[in-house]
Image 1 (cartoon, rainbow, N blue to C red):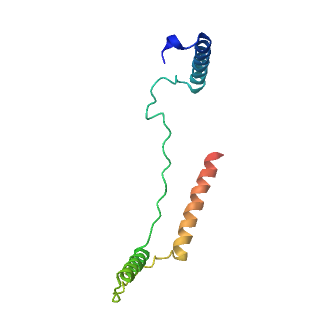
Image 2 (image 1 turned 60 degrees about the vertical axis):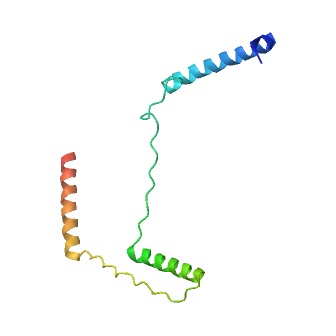
Image 3 (image 1 turned 180 degrees about the horizontal axis):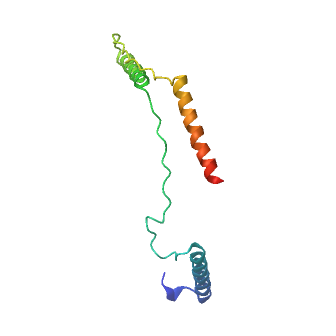
Length: 119
């Protein structure tokens, strides 16, 4: 469809809508601080929030692997599966009462310095 075949009333309506769009874009550019026709730089875009990945222990992973191997063996019709023994997890050492007391005393001393510095 060429412009010559479009009625003038429709062309006027299209032009008024175009003018309204341009004025709204200009107003939005004033509010946003940059014209909309300008290319948006990657630094202006908000950064994606990084998702925290979950941690899995070696023992947990070994259990999942063993269960999946058992499922596949069942599908294949195999009956002999060797159980996977997970490696023993080391116990974390605990803080002794004396060590905790030393840390608490040092922290109290730090806060005392901060309080003295404020006065």
